[in-house]
Length: 116
Image (cartoon, rainbow, N blue to C red; front, side, top):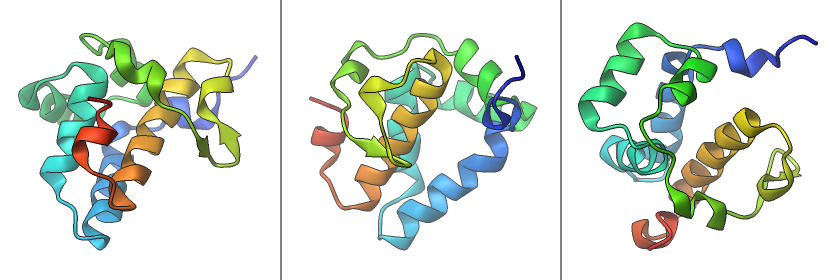
């Protein structure tokens, strides 16, 4: 079975799009970074290294230090699919990140985005 195209896409190619989406709604790159670090367990240095190395999504999430346990509280629809019902673990992680960036762009408070 062939891998989904997004799995082999460099995270560094999509990251600026996350930042642009947030900044268009008067949110910041730092908030996007906070969300990514919260979800994956990367620190800022680790995140920057992943971007610099142009690792694909599969490697990015495969090398993530620790996926946050509260990620299971992320619910909702991204690209017409409920994130909590996605069967493929990697696709679900990608969609979790998409959902969190969507929430940021919609003006949701960081405390709620980070499920605190």
